Image (cartoon, rainbow, N blue to C red; front, side, top):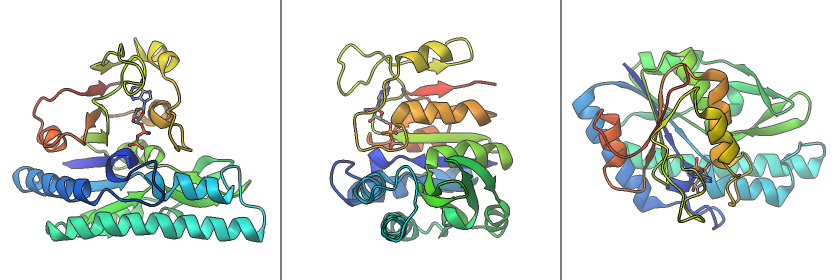
Length: 263
Ligand code: ADP
């Protein structure tokens, strides 16, 4: 059984502080994943968001719309460097919990064309899984044959991986309890939507506002939009800032969250 976990940038970084990892949370989540893995015996891919290691450098260097000159190429390389540092924090915590985590740098396996996924070669990820490793991917910059370079979010990668590699369980850890009728951080009347299906997806997308953070890849709305293309298995969105929520979700226990089932 293959499980995919997305660790949101909102959970593993302080999204408002430049290149600031939430090491405490990363360590706790690594422990939860290790505990669930010991009990459940499943293959695992971890994809982490870039948080303040990605969105802020992209803005600072002005490369959101493309990479066309040497100054922007330095910005592209600097963003890739910065995202790789966040991966090191994540992998270091996973290794401490004896999870054999190996980073697969997005630009070595996927390309964009005009900000959209053009090619994603999952062979090395399959090979790593087969050899008993836990591949780790992340939101990062990738080459783009129209714009020179663009941003591949973890939210873009996860649904593709789930479809291509036939994942049975996909869990997104974020910093809120799931998808709400409005941003729960700014609207006290926001209500949790426990189940999103083809029947209410239109309404949900309509009510979703772009997250007012430094997110350059669309926040919660971007996340759900990506699911529309490759939704083959149900996706569970859970609050990974609350202790044991991710672990319980991985083990199939019921916790408050949003399930998105679009097939
Ligand atoms: P991550 O970077 O962890 O993947 P995102 O920033 O992309 O997370 O999405 C989670 C954020 O989306 C939350 O912090 C929340 O403030 C914001 N958000 C905006 N609208 C909604 C909504 N309707 N329901 C839930 N979260 C929302």
